[in-house]
Image 1 (tube, rainbow, N blue to C red):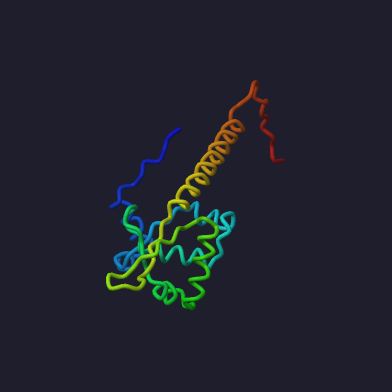
Image 2 (spheres, rainbow, N blue to C red):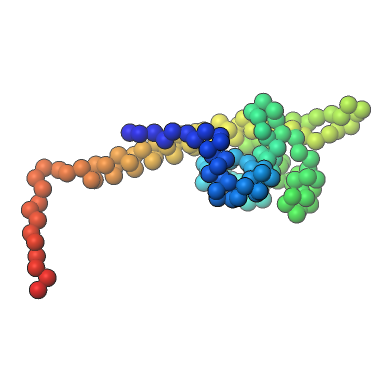
Length: 161
């Protein structure tokens, strides 16, 4: 079975620019695994919670550099109240999908939280493995259906008259 060769970062950006336009892509973009979108319901994530995750992901550029957008930033992007964001982040924590890391400002008081997605990443990896296995079974079943078995039936040419 041939596997897809991953596109280089430059090739992927070029493909995205072809779809969305160079100016739009120059303003920034966020990579999100399809399995998160496909299994949103299975994970128990509401549309509001998915939107919150997307906005936080926008600030997550490197694995070890955890994002820390402010609640007000997330709320403003979504057009909802800060309390809506807080409530939904609490639910995401209760679902075990994110871990909120409280941070302190240098001069006392709190500053924006950091968000750790290790649990979500591991869960999505398990779902992705399942999805890949399901696709492979489908490919094998199709191959089996299309493989000739024994004697082929004789075909007759039928006139259209």
